[in-house]
Length: 332
Image (cartoon, rainbow, N blue to C red; front, side, top):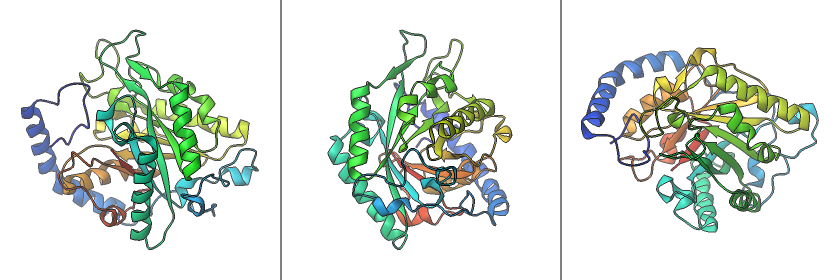
């Protein structure tokens, strides 16, 4: 069971290291749980109380009329994060080992995601659920021809998934593993997609490394200033092009993956989600969700479920019962 990390580019971490990490987490779990319970007992699900357009009304029927360009400033403040449980299937067609999107044909992925979203809707008693295709656009590599240690999806593949998302009433999240790149520079590379109202972005600090380290050699990190710079860019983009608010997802399963986290800016014009990204037993994952997904610097929280690596994957009801309730549920 791997608690500290999610995946590697080659072999898993050594067993001794895994056992040490698990033991450390087990010893700390009780303390984290007590502290988290006190800290977050009165916290709501995040975000503000402004009314927003119900996105889930179009779930599964194609098109997202509420997320259209050219809206007024008041309408542009609306985001699907505020009222929906966002359920995503993660992966890349270029790497089947990374997740569901690379293990099934696109239409089959859409069918599986629709079924999962319906289970969430049932568990919420008919609440608002928005499915998303979580596509890894920039995949970390152990070797680099351009110095960035990244392999990018081609435009045709991205367009295929964007078209699929729109046909099925989903949104699209493009995930960037950063490598030796600069987070803001990598986000700017997908600007043509971000100009679409139903496309969002995720950053994966695990593979953000510098110097002689290669992705997979160590757990990477980004700084709060990187996150703030990306938030500013997204806010400027939505203002300039009259787009709805953008969601920015940042994965985290170790404290060091986000340095100076207390300096992260809480903005009204960007929806920042900290996704607790790590696999292991359900009780430890719940503790780590409180540590990261429910952190003071996380306006919204997310949690990733590893269907093949979590020994006892949390059910939809268990996930929705977390307090504060996550806004984002990522399946890998």
